[in-house]
Length: 242
Image 1: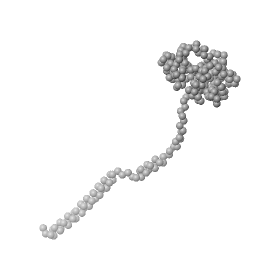
Image 2: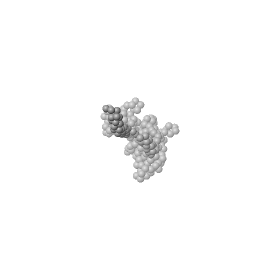
Image 3: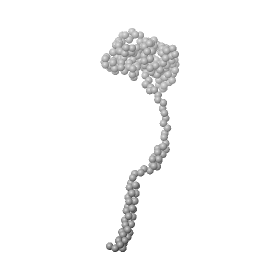
Image 4: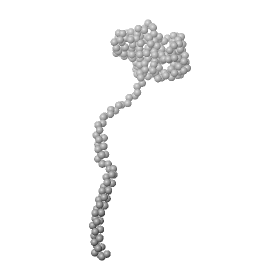
């Protein structure tokens, strides 16, 4: 083949190759662009917007509550009125936990000559509570009558310190539905009776409420502050030194 023909074919090939190269570059460029767009790219402002929304949320102020010591339910003694000449006076319900607590209450009452007993539903068996030695002592009605106690008894209920004694009364002495009562000397109730008779109690008064506390000299005081009447609760202010 002559040189003239060689140059001619080379020119033809060069001209035909230009579109092929152009198509190849176009395809490569498009493919590369598609690969880049398929990569998951999180816009920076998305995180910023999320943070802004979170910070912009209205926050309700939280009230800080100062922790208060748990208060145990108020324990009371309730006097049961017997058929005595002074039974015209209403029964008294007194809170001993508010200012004394059960342990000190027992110390003060036993110091005044009171005794704590457990009695069953039949009333035939009675057990004296010995707090010092943590035991129960069988008692008889004869011993109680000769003990100079008032015919009014005080019922003590819902006192955690008495649970172990009540369980022992059931398991050891087979008492049914046992309850704790406190018997006080006759002079104890006479003091209360004398003071109340001098006071002008509200009419139709069916019960009195109050609490125990100690005076500056350590003496036991029964403070009465409410009278339960037919017309409602009346406020009173009576302090009795025991």
